[in-house]
Image (cartoon, rainbow, N blue to C red; front, side):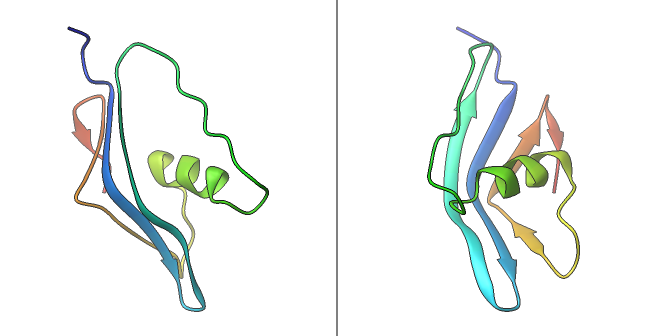
Length: 73
């Protein structure tokens, strides 16, 4: 079994005018994952949330957001 490197459960990112990511969940071990989607589908905002780089007034919420075993919320 692989070690869990990244655990995302129910990730949502909200701005006052819109929800830009809605209820995204995935678990990643040692394998690679590609986020693929249309322009404006939330790929970059998801990456920003994982790195803690969502700027105000953006609000990140999730049931779980763990990177390398650390809570990233």
